[in-house]
Length: 168
Image 1 (tube, rainbow, N blue to C red):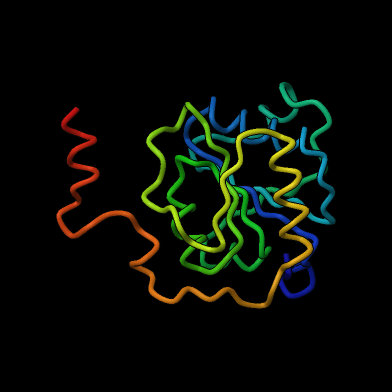
Image 2: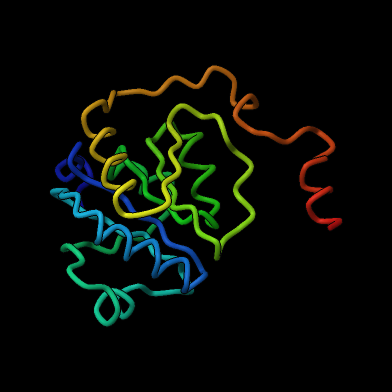
């Protein structure tokens, strides 16, 4: 694919997880949101192909294209990234100044170590996803300003939050 020719403000990049339950839920909620995009790109987890999940379990999933390669190149496909909560792409996407939407899923707790980035949105159902994606489409900018990358993480140097969580 020639990224220069296909890049569109009307596109979305979906990145999935190794967790099949989370991946199915992520894709299902996207289909139910009924938000239309000219291009739907999916970067599947290398150990969990999604074609069978979509074809057999998801009703009315829009046309899509599976993309592969390094995320640094794949981020060029869209300004909007809809990502699995359990995926490391969530943090990468925010730091690459992409509008990032993640489905809050009980199958992928704990939440990622990010909470205040102006380009990060959490949704919990199809209606909320639809509303969020439509709002982002209306306000997409050419760049997102992140003043201080560390201010968006709620961890400290000693990783106190995670140490407390892991000790329970």
